[in-house]
Length: 75
Image 1 (cartoon, rainbow, N blue to C red):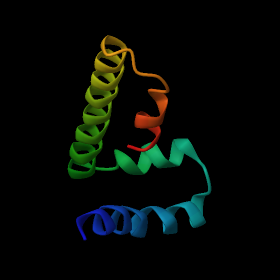
Image 2 (spheres, helix red, strand yellow; image 1 turned 120 degrees about the vertical axis):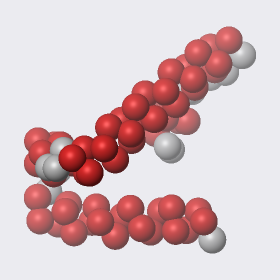
Image 3 (spheres, rainbow, N blue to C red; image 1 turned 180 degrees about the vertical axis):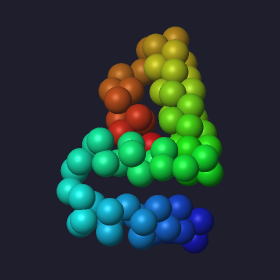
């Protein structure tokens, strides 16, 4: 149930934006950092993604795992 909510809720916000703006990365970051509260969530998301990516690549390399990009892509 949480997996479904974790997918459906973010996409319920992203799909209307995508339909309106298309794949406009500049508009995405402009909206992400539009005010202090959205900036707070945006920065938390970016930092969390960077920490996760660093962890995946450092531990994956240490354990000699292959195709580490898959873990990043599915995040």
